[in-house]
Length: 313
Image 1 (cartoon, rainbow, N blue to C red):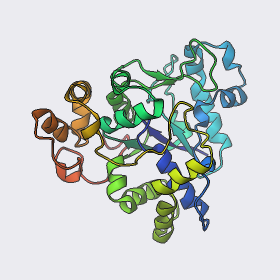
Image 2 (image 1 turned 90 degrees about the vertical axis):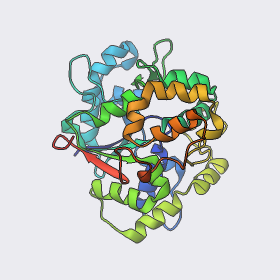
Image 3 (image 1 turned 30 degrees about the vertical axis):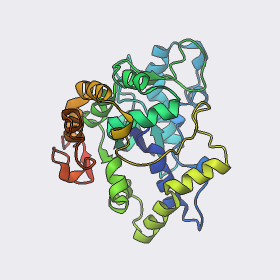
């Protein structure tokens, strides 16, 4: 048994992906409950760590927890029946022992979602109920982590995040695990092609009609309507809503040139790798940019998906 890690920097479409996969596997006549999505963040749960590793994480430092995290992931892989999907926001880092946080022996593959950081900052500020400037600073911090639990005991383990571009590069440039990377913008532009490639990468039985139904059941208006009627367990208490807009390009009216410049200066090479840089530079030059970055926007990322593995850099 091994796991497909659904990896992403926060607010890059992970929950939407999980909703589509849940509805694809469920095959029900109605949308799956947003509180029953596959891929819950078991790998980051303090309770799960204590149960599977057999050590009290409350008595451990963050560094000691990190040292034992590979054991947790191996235990999860052994205990989770296929198809096994687990959401993770952690960067691909190594424990103090030198072991990879996500061991090869526990991994069937990685589905990595990447989103324009200019849009991420807008969505993340809304999610955390913080200012744009605060989130820009956070996304540019190479030591950033979630939860942390350094001052208080959280229900979640410390999550090493790194800066936005560091997070992306950590997963895509490692050579141990097979990675299928999809841009959030391509999920929006051509969901049947982009989600279809994910379904095939995960080795699920292919059914075009089933996928179309799953995409419809996981449409943003449906997810938002569910969240308004039922408390979504993954929503931050301080966040006005979890499912906000589900669009690309909102950064154009939400960010000022200074904020765009700060993100471009910190992440320009990786933004260029995925076709996000051209419009940002055009915006900074004063002409507002062209259409939202896509395959036709130039840059090295062409098509909706690309597979990285230890055989293909």
